Length: 81
Image (cartoon, rainbow, N blue to C red):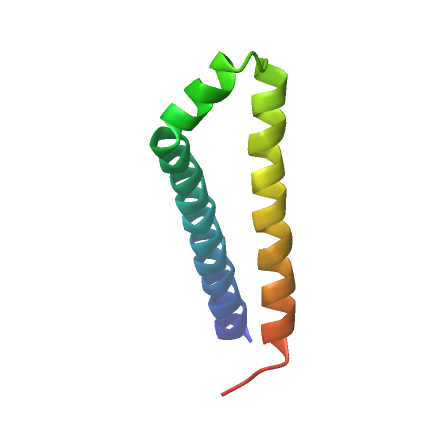
């Protein structure tokens, strides 16, 4: 019985590390996306849009990506190989 609990603890740790790595990759992707789109953001600023509007645009992008990811993951849940 002790072995089962050790395996469960190991699996919990692995899942936590994979989740942390996933979050770090997502942060990296969005940071690189912002760097890549720097000229677009500068153009938006020149059109007299404030920081709040830019933050809303970036927030909307993140929400859209999260929603499509969740829908995609949910549709794939029933699919097994």
